[in-house]
Length: 236
Image (cartoon, rainbow, N blue to C red; front, side, top):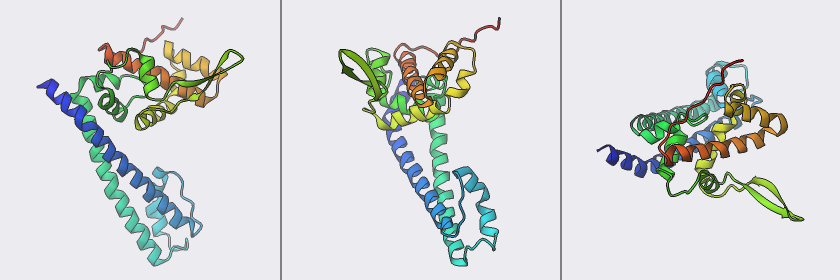
């Protein structure tokens, strides 16, 4: 029964992610439209959370140049935003429930920077990952391995290839982009590796390298049925 449920999750999760992704794109378009409407009157709201927080104040301020019709237009777009946001939240809750009931996805969430969306998308895309012979193959399939160019017989690493599953790659990279500064402060083998890399490379390079490394760890977790454990070094 448990195996049947896991198989069902793997079959339906890609569709769930696709629908959720479309709604996220629609929400982003609505937010950009709200910004454009207010920018016409010299009001320049910032990122999504600040816009969501201050929009009631903006609409209540009768001195900011927004006419009655424009206020109604903004309110209409705002209601559509709320509706889509609630639908996205429903899908997020469903994905969280799947992680709770799916052991492989649950194990993946123990890996730094791997949340519910990334874990469920990864399991949906690769299953137990045993179709890949090693972690590097999974990273290459996700487009996370640097391309190489050879000049004068010397290989030179270029940017990541960006081939393969684009949606999964975006989830992996975005999760790691926010992770590296905090991870570098942890006295673990992975934390020390990130700290040393940050000292000599650009942050974007570190993000790509960390994403590649954690994709390989994800392969080990899935293909070898293991759990990720962050080993804390005792202070001397």
